[in-house]
Image (tube, rainbow, N blue to C red; front, top):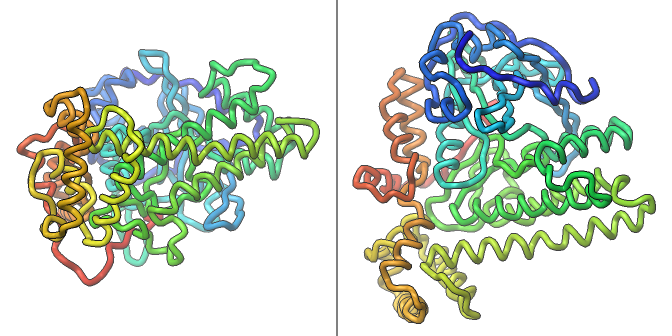
Amino acid sequence: MTAGWNLDNSYARLPDKFFTRLNPTVVRSPKLIVLNEALAASLGFKVGELKSEDNVAVFAGNRLPEGAAPLAQAYAAHQFGHFNMLGDGRALLLGEQITPHCERVDIQLKGAGRTPYSRGGDGRAALGPMLREYIISEAMHGLGIPTTRSLAVVATGEAVIRETGLPGAILTRVAASHIRVGTFQYIANWGTVEDVRTLADYTLQRHFPDIGKSPERYLELLKAVVSRQAALIAKWQLAGFIHGVMNTDNMAISGETIDYGPCAFMDTYDPSTVFSSIDRQGRYAYANQPPIAAWNLARFADTLLPLLHRDEEQAVQLAEDVLTGFQKLYHRTWLAGMRAKLGLFDEAAEDEDLVENLLNMMEKHRADYTNTFRQLTLGMQVDANLLQTSEFVQWYESWQARVGRQQEAEAAWRQLMKDSNPAVIPRNHRVEEALERAVEYADYSAMNKLLAALEKPYAYTPEQVEFTTLPAPSTAPYRTFCGT
């Protein structure tokens, strides 16, 4: 195959306890549904060749590209606070593509069949959830939020049985790596301290090479992961994104958003918003995402304690000193992002109150999160429920006075707002519409149109306007599912 495959297998050179080697399960009649041509080209692939029968067979798991060493990774997780042994139950890492810029990225097939970690599952995936991950992960990329990417989706020609029979599919996922907090938890729980050291050294070499051989490198690793996660979660909150299942296996050490199951974007601003059908207690609600991230990072720190210091008490103190910095890092990044959303180049003492007062009004009057900032950006009238209140009028006057005290002209701060407030997000009703037409009628026009609008969400083009409309009123809350 001459498509540009350039695979290496550094993870496969780790000790065998880190994974299980096995090949994907062959499917009946694979058909390419969508190929991310821009991503493919950036990875060094020849786009035309990837559409060939041989390479569609690769995306389906029916054929292995040269250099592949497929494996299922082992990991554990705290799921809703409870510790479990997990692993790739339906995903296989083909290898690591070395790009033209000498970057190393995982190429993984999701839905590739049973593994030793399937725990009774069929190892397969349905078309709808795989297309959903494709849409949302590409939307996140367009928003500038670190994320895994979706290279391709193929239909398998086979049904998967959930509540009913659904068309099967396999997603090809691209990631900086699939090393998770749960990977460290697995090795710490079922391996030795030297195994944890091996994983930590590999992670440092792959993701944090600048830390190098520092005597404090494991403490620096913890600091680096905390810093990346603080920045990531702040970006989620600024965009109104709700992951849905922030278990420790869904926190990537690289700092990318990973595993798009019951995720969604808020319409009405409400910090208690939960979309996941299984999160009945609101553990992973929008407002809880920062503290849950801190909790997950504490579990990561637990695995590193033997590497931080020989004395356990001193190791715990070192870890706690790093972990207490998460909230400060997160809040600083979030507030800087909020300033940008309001067109503020500089800092002033009243800025946090200005932000909080706006958010409180939005919550009280059930204003749309994305559209409120979009309307402020464009100088349009905001939600009527907000506009008619005296408190908003007072807030608006305070905001105008605040931006007016800056050195930058209005054109500059309006542009800052445009660069910080998306004109369009993957609205839940638009995603569902696209998925229904794709799955039920094999009509991908709505999905392609949505993807085009989401590619450059800060462009404010006329074509994006139709995607800013809100869903029809409903008495039932929007619910999403894991899609397993």
